[in-house]
Image 1 (spheres, rainbow, N blue to C red):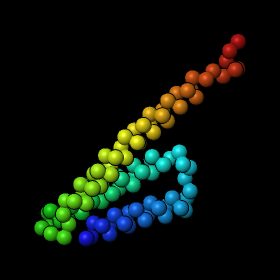
Image 2: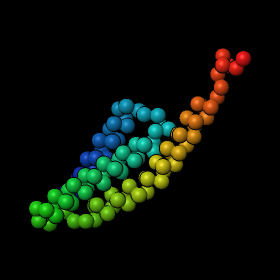
Image 3: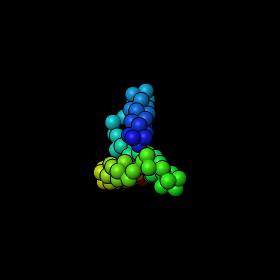
Image 4: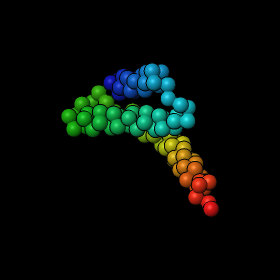
Length: 101
């Protein structure tokens, strides 16, 4: 029960940040990766806390769900980084007119 509240809080913070700062849509894969990573880290910490303290409030399902979200967002983010680096390489390879004589 507690993990679902944590998921909602983390998601609300990201949605509030997107609403307030209005990042460009080209950075959406980075935002998704940050959201899924934070969900996974928070779920993992809560699960380990419950495991070490013997609390039965948290189970392994939220951690597995957040891992699934992370695995879903990881290929999107990798493709985004690949496209971003290829665009940066193209910009670097453009010769400057002052150097050609």
